[in-house]
Length: 212
Image 1 (cartoon, rainbow, N blue to C red):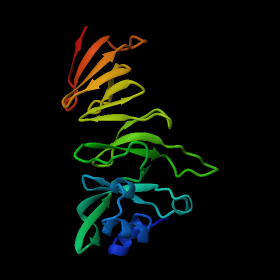
Image 2: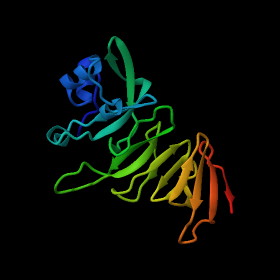
Image 3: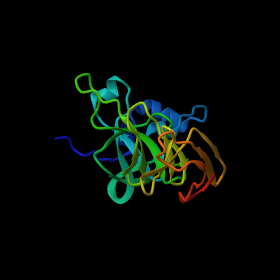
Image 4: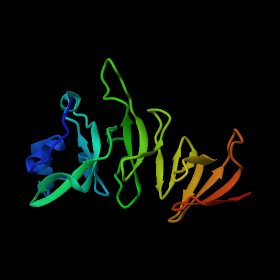
């Protein structure tokens, strides 16, 4: 039975992010840059901390579990600042695809795995969106499908548009235009699953109206 990680200092933080000397150089050098998301820093006080497994070491993978800052969590001291982390779930994730972290948004993209992929037990992963508590709010149908997150509560996959609050699909179309507040989608569902027309979709609320 594996023990939960205990974070006691800066060295432990470096080990968490899988590459101690490299990460040290990256953080403190002004001549180098790496996307913090690639290191598991997702934003909104959420971190993807790599598992201590041979697959991560041998194949340079970043299978990890989600942690969030919490006053009652395990302490870490970084640059004389102490933070506390608690584990959000036992789900396994990896950064990939179009992952860009939360930034100032309520959701971000990761790849979800039922298990760490091995030759005997392969798992290609499923692209998904999580919320700031690590809960999966949207999952694609297979490893080759990717979500396109527009912000707010709107995501599309395979040309179908979903409301993340309800989890329900509501439009389908190949052509769309996005403004700062709205997405305009030409809904041309060949299966007549959704009413045809041009949908004006509010990105933040998911409300929409249809123009014939």
